[in-house]
Image (cartoon, helix red, strand yellow):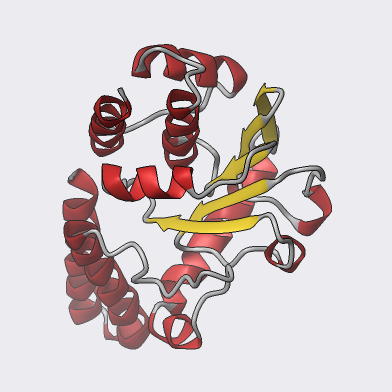
Length: 221
């Protein structure tokens, strides 16, 4: 819930900055509008607001509307990728691997499911072309409904599964935990979180993601 307020407050703060410093009015107001729109999207659970399509691309109209935000997001992602010592991905079990968004040269082979949870990034072409690719966009810091999560997990093929969001922490942890619960590999949400954190210590679910997976767990029992 706090994401919606933070995004909207940041957007309105940029409007004020633009009003006080007219030299950068257009790009600052543009970025501020993007943040306000994203805050509303979080409020309404509009996970495809950024134009993410089932084929892993982002719609041309979204590149126009959200260009400042997308530039900022991609830049931050690359900076974090270069500065962090965290591996690109980590195995959880023999048939489940979790990680961050990958570059084309980092793509591991041998997966029946390649789950892309990002709403804010286009997927690498080499991955998008794979028959294993499955797009289930979730806004950063947000969660789908338990029903939508259940439908997505139920649609997966049997076999090895790779799951990623931007950094491989929140959304990835949520979806991986849903898979572990659905397979009966763990008996509770906390047990699943412990296994995921052992594999990838950065895994962390916020309040809305915990609420989603707890409701999912009740549905699965």
